[in-house]
Length: 341
Image 1 (cartoon, rainbow, N blue to C red):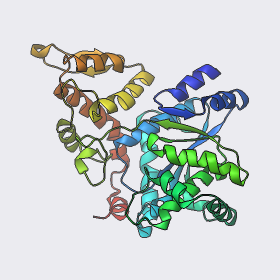
Image 2: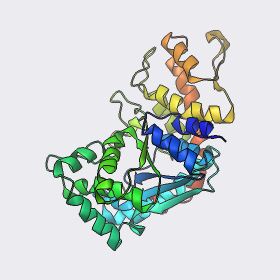
Image 3: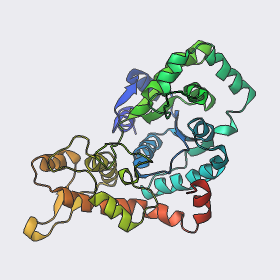
C-alpha cells in the first residue's frame, strides 16, 4: 500500500484531521507509525462503538501500531463508581476484540492498554501537576465540556480529565490520537499544552458522531431506546430499529441512515458487497445499493420506505453483533458485576 492509499484509508469516514500536512509527513517518514484511541469505561458498549472499531481497523490496514486505552481512571473521573472499574475493564477487554472479529479485522498489531497501569507512576503524576500550573480552570472546564458529565458545581475530577488525556499521548508514545468530534476541545487542549512542558504535539483525527435512534438525536444511557446494546437479543434489536426515529424522505439527524452510512456501507465497501433491501414484489421487489449516495438519493425521493430500510438494517446489525453475543455467552456473572442494576 502506497502513501496515497494509506492517506485515503485514514481519511475516509473522518470529519476533521489536525493537521493533514503533519499526517502526510508522518506517512512519508515512518514505516509503522502508532496511534491510540482512549475509551473511558463508563457506560455499556453499544453498536455506536462500531464507528471507531472500523476506524481503528483502517489504521491497522494502513500499517499502524494501534493502541486502545481502556481508561479506568478516566471512568472514575467521569463518575463511574471506583468499585466497578475492574469488572468494567474486563468486560470491555472481552467485547471489543469480539467486535473486531465480527468485521473480520486483522488485530496482530492491536494492543489494549489499561490506564491505571501507567497513569499512577511518579513521572506521570509530576507531569499532571506541571500542566496544572499552566492550564486555567476555564480552559480545563471548556476542554472537558463535551465529554465529561457537567453539573452546576463541577467536581475537580472533571477538570483533571483533559490534563490526563493530553499526557496519555506522550506516555503511550504515539504519533496520533483518534476520537469522535465531541473530543475536539480536549484534543486541541493537548496540542496546546503538551509543548508547554516539553512534549511534541500530536496529530488529531476525528470522526463524526452517529445520532441516536430517538428524536432527541443522542445516544444516551438514560434513554434505553436511543441505542442498541451489543448484547441485545435479535427480537429487541428489531423492536428498537422498528420504533427508531426515521422520518420518510428526511436525512438530517436520522440515526438509522447515519448508521447505514458510517458503519454498514464501510463494511460492505471492505467486503466488496452490496447492501440488499428485501421487499415483496408488489412493492417493487428487492433493492441493491453499492454506495450510500444512491441509497440516500432514493430515500430523499421517497423511493425507499423507512420500514424497508429498518428491516434491512436490523438484519445487518443482528449479524454484526452475533459474534459478540456468542463471546459473552455464559459470562452473566461478569456482566452483572460490571453493570449491576
